[in-house]
Length: 102
Image 1 (cartoon, helix red, strand yellow):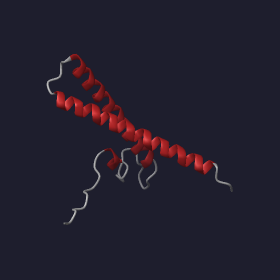
Image 2: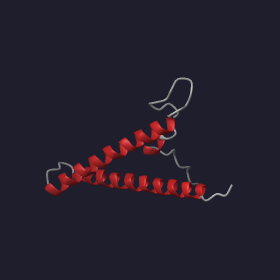
Image 3: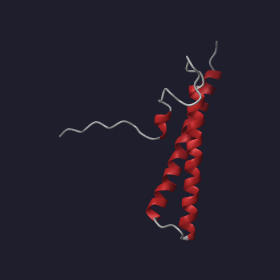
Image 4: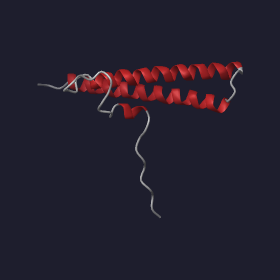
């Protein structure tokens, strides 16, 4: 029995690997990380707004598709957990750098 390989990761993380991101300058790659981070945070914010709106629709009973609303809420939760994990890892890395003796 053979196990097929996993496909490429898609979604919010693909923004960080895109070389041509809004805000780059001509002839260089200055600002690409900052622009990618800003874009990812904007997408996180819009995802959170969609999740919030979907949860309000479910709570008030005005949703036409409750399954889709629950998926939106779960996506918002997963996006926030990913953002928190990335923040924690970045904070750990900065603390490790600050404790490095020269």
